[in-house]
Image 1 (cartoon, rainbow, N blue to C red):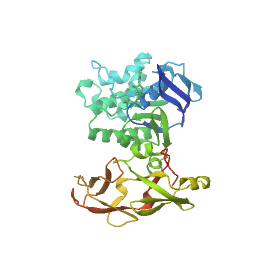
Image 2: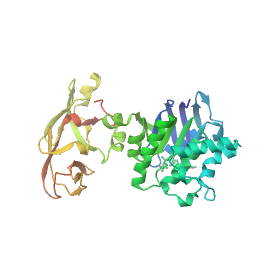
Image 3: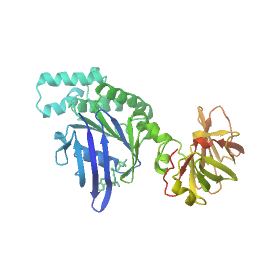
Length: 364
Ligand code: ATP
């Protein structure tokens, strides 16, 4: 159990449509992450699944039952918030026990469930303490414990790690992945952090401006982004998008002109689109980590304006003609280059992506 279906789900606030006809199926036991920039509607969508926001149109089904009109407690879900929402005057034990007390569960059942959750979350030795004496990570674990004792069909997480520092966030990512393996319960997780999405998700749902930009396994989104939005959002530093002109399109792919060089990128172009593509502007996408020093299929002479030496890698930024953003490249940290030093960098056409004038990718 724990299957979720969204069917043409819409949310409007006044005249403002923040969730635009979203349809999605989440399988039992899946870890699905909703990711997207601030304001894309991911929290609103999660809150609709939870029953904390009214659904303007469309249907939400949990295990095949329409839950639109059910209150949160009747939906078989448990939600964990960014703010932890703990009661400061209660012990860790009582905070975790709280939902069971509301249900008037027998004392023995409460003790068993709280102790089981505390063991999973390594909170056994903290049960008598107050939240004020715990670290941020431990407090978030108490909040998760309170969700676990309810034995929900689906866990909902709303940016649960945002208040933690970078090192703790990394630890908690591992903890949450372990928890998911141990419980095998469906989890839906909202974040704006692509690292959380990439590391924890079975499938990522990238949201953009109230609609789904792409759904897929983390590496599928990285290797085969369907549009410039996903290509730019997944991957850090972000993909470079170089404006180029199409010379021809054929069975072999698309040949573009880039700084006096002819580059053929092996993508599928439907036969009926080929003739019209010649002479048009498209975007050549190349990730910074796919650029290296020296010779390759495509060579660019650049003079980086800024070079960041991070130890394990060196990140360079340069201005290119016709490119508004900085051109970015990532080299191994062992390769020392300096700003204002002119160098040849190159990339392989097999690492390139091509996007049409609407930002849609040609399939690689
Ligand atoms: P963030 O990461 O910043 O929380 P988000 O992707 O989760 O962003 P939502 O919180 O879902 O975005 O908000 C989507 C849009 O809906 C935003 O423009 C927000 O201002 C608007 N919005 C959210 N709640 C309300 C509300 N109660 N009344 C009016 N507008 C709202």
